[in-house]
Length: 214
Ligand code: 5GP
Image (tube, rainbow, N blue to C red):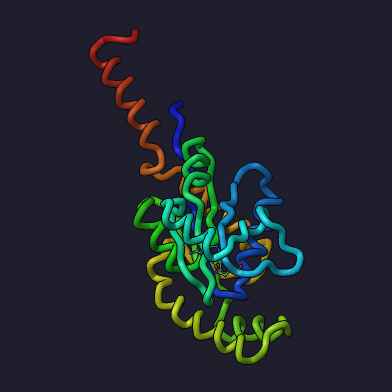
């Protein structure tokens, strides 16, 4: 069988929708199956985060230099900080036939769709807006001002949801992980992701029909 390229999968969602948790469980449940792209960011490192694991933490100057050097597949600002997906790593993974997941916000996601029109765009949401608000308030770590700010960002992001390919309603985490896995695995059967296999079959059949390759 011909070797196909890996899929580019974009996972976006409201702050508080649980996309980070889905990703963590997905990578644990299917070790080696999915590869997570690690972004660069100018935001401060949070407690428990490590450089090169959650993000590559960059100064403003370092980040701007990467933009200048065309090192990003996409980049965007979110809540006053810059975030970008390193281009070379993603390209290398898909060339090796590996599925790579980008956990990024909406503006970046739509940039990726322009570069890779066949990218799979998944949007994660809690079952309702009330549930989203409760989750943000329930964290207890944010001031009411920050919660209101997050909800305003969510309202804007919701306008872009129709541009995504799939909606993942995160009610139970285990179900959501399975749903994401199934969406990606089903996509592998789509003809557009099997160009090389189809071309190989066409070539071989053409040769057979001409009496070659007996
Ligand atoms: P946080 O600072 O909470 O880790 O992330 C804030 C937002 O930035 C999240 O929606 C996250 O998915 C998004 N994000 C993380 N990395 C990237 C990236 O490389 N590009 C873009 N466009 N968004 C990103």
